[in-house]
Amino acid sequence: MNYTPLAWTRPDPSPPPPRWAEEGFLLEIYRNLIYQDRWHMIVDGLWLMLQITAFAAIIGIFLGLMAALMRISRFKVLRGIALTYITVIRGTPMLVQLMIWWFVVFSPLNWPIFLATVIAFGVNSGAYVCEIFRGGIMAVDHGQTEAGRSLGLTSGQNMRLIVLPQATKNSLPTLVNEFITLIKETSLAAFIGVQELTFVANHIRSRTFSGFVPLFAVALVYLSAVMLLTWLMGMVERRLRKSDSR
Image 1: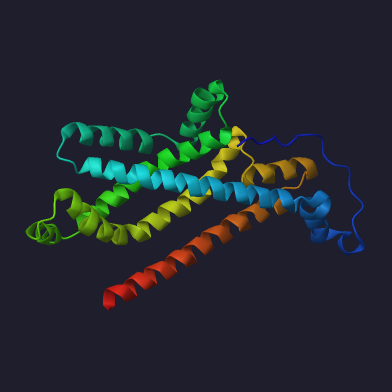
Image 2 (image 1 turned 90 degrees about the vertical axis):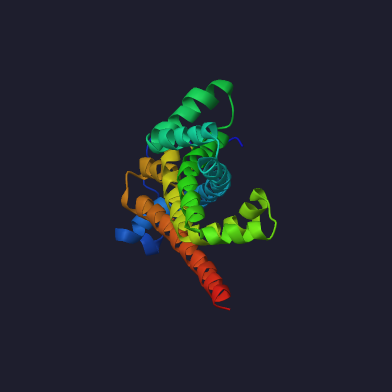
């Protein structure tokens, strides 16, 4: 995906406001959100943030699950690769990783900045998801595995049919917290020029010389997204608890 950078120009001249917004806080709302339909930029930034979060979460779940299986593998080489991945990713700042992916890897190849952002966040999230899944797997009673073997299941079938479903259920609350963190961390993408919510807020602020309304509007959008995800995951957890009690 290609995105045309927003122009950073001199501040707007004071627009003639409508009568309902001639002074005070209403004037600030008009200048920062309504004039020139600037709220559209916030909606576009929200949509981009959701895309980054969704694709990065998919990558993170896949990498995290693969790394978790490698971490509990009998093969020392696989355990070493997974441990190195986790150590490097969790031991370096997300912003530094994002800048390396873009300025060192993707930009010289003229690849899309959106792809660099998704991969950077996905790889970072995968290291944390790995430990979440590993904890969930280790929490499954060993007797479950023994029961599967007694039924003639192979190790792979045991893991796929018995251990992973229970591990996923055990890990769900922690996974939700990781996805909430991922939503908020997407604001770092503004540092490499991705036009997500934080970038848009700074752009509006540069045009109006007013930081209160655009920054608080974006903060409210992030808060709403986090609360919505928390509510949805709460519904899922309640349904899972009901199914367990039957």
